[in-house]
Length: 422
Ligand code: GLC
Ligand code: MG
Image 1: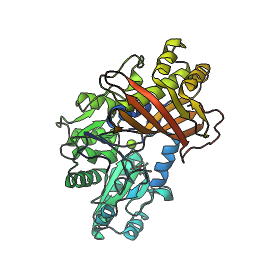
Image 2: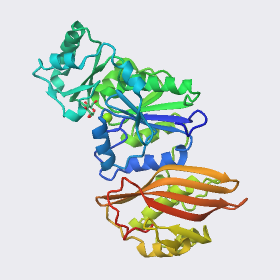
Image 3: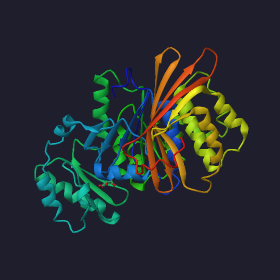
């Protein structure tokens, strides 16, 4: 959050499973559309928050499976754990507030008396979250009985049913909604209250997100019955909450448009993006567009035409250098020439490229440094590298690529650089 010097333009607080991530889409198209929109138009002045029911262990697993961006803030275990930044620094202050009228031992003891409850995996049992599976037909009855018993034992808990199968028991002060309220209060105290906040979800544990004042909300089209029921009973007349027509991340993009929260055209939805020159010089856009072009070039989705590579070459400085992750240096223009050979080599294959954490800084007037993590997924291999691009721009002319340097990112699954182009 330190990188923001003024209030964020937009804060997106999104659930992951079946909201940001569509588990029915092996191509991850809506997620990739969201990613390029975020990096293109929001990363530099907005905040991305993931709010998931998953524990840190399962959250990290999902990150390996799906092309998720790096959020600024991660809320895990149904609003019981909040962490900041890439290194996920925990908010100890938040944890302390959760000890009020909470006793893990008593929760375990009382829940063990219910034969309808099946304990979830050990990774999902957290200091302030105890989780079970329970059949839909039994959920209401068990919830009622259990809350009475825990109340009698002096606890103040919240029982949440999600996805038609998961039952979570949390301290009353916890939950995704309370965590969001805590965050908003904290941001406000720092003078960084977001101009707009959009909450996104699909299931029972997301309901609370939609009752936080002044927050826009989107229930994605594929929202669960329990969330739609909650909405019909509690928030039907709130014009700030919509049920999207589109699934998952597509619904989030739709909501950005409907609430007029900012640009909602993903670069992935533009087919002729090389032609579309932005009005004002923005080097971050340039990089997002380039890597998208690179993906389409190798998938054979753009025409193999000289004009494309010629225009790319023209935007590279004649003495521009590309430093390959192996350390080898090549001229930028030669690298573009080399790229020509790879047109369509990934046709019909699982191949995607996305940019994460694109941040541009103007170092001196007319000189920009863009830093980003560039990811490439090819079949089941994923490789990432930290990329630094230096651009210059002259009055009235476009941006010129001066220097590109790449180093392997520590999370890459393979480090064989023989088939790495750019
Ligand atoms: C995630 C968690 C699980 C929890 C569910 C609903 O799937 O892994 O423990 O019950 O979200 O909140
Ligand atoms: Mg979900």
